[in-house]
Length: 401
Image (cartoon, rainbow, N blue to C red; front, side, top):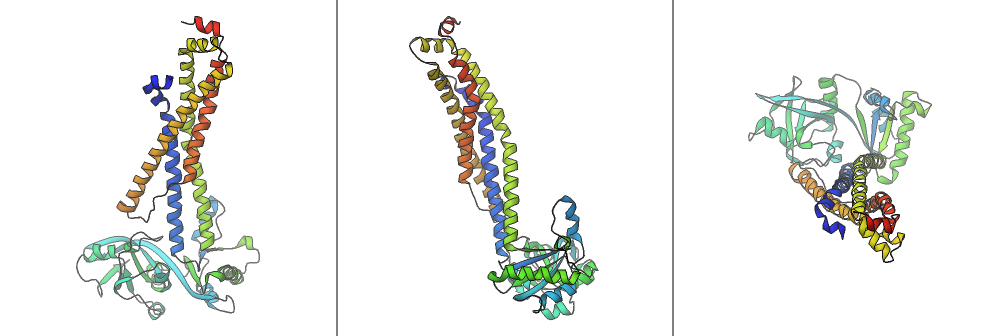
């Protein structure tokens, strides 16, 4: 067979197919892994959590500025806590955040400071290695207390005792009352590298604002979340004097909504990136067409001899088409093996080295797609050379030198 005779040429011919299929497998598998990672993080927050953000829900790039508005205030929190407005609410927690440098003595570290209530410890499943979490009483009196992550403790205090010590955040002195257990990047935030303080303290002394960056609402059960979310929307519209839902200056997101949005965004991104990777398949297909045309020319006498002993044009076309398909299928199989291998290696690095909760995932659909696309490329780009071979005149072919 001609393919076996020119092994090096055949290998170089399918290189574009191998690269293309490898890229598609890698992108689709990593895309699915990333989606599962994000969805697991959302699930980890609890299915009964409802997120209220300032600004309307972004519909385009121009709307993202709405995220930073100051539309959520204390009166909104009080309204949501009132059973006459929203029934089935278990807890409500305002949230404010900032990224800043904290110091202790000569040591300093840049961290995210998260201001909230005890609800945060439930949502993010925070466990304390030492000390206690701040209480509702400390929240009400705007106490300057802080719970720090393990990485923050190691950087600022090393092996020394941290509980009871005083750190500075934006020139405000805070007393360390708790240290979280080493958790890793298993939530939407790296809790090991964060500082948690009462939202009232953060709001007044660190940010100097009277609004919130968000409000977390915990429903009494997962079943009533849709109803609670609807009542939250109605209550906030009444509080803000809004009659047209299109003019909402807030957006309410349930965990189900967030998961659906993440799934949609990740699917679009995966398809987009896979489409870019598929360009190499076109390049590979053109290479196969070119080499098959060269093969047809080199084997002109063989074609003439086969026709002279009774082979039909269909037989010749089928022969060259099969060779083209074999080339692309072999390239597809090699690409799938490399794609799975690179996916496993990347997943191993992300889970072991980067310490993400990444799970090795290979989409069966990506494997089927890889083989299907490889076969399709073989047919499309092999059809013209095969047709050229089938149309050769046997007498002229036998005379070819």
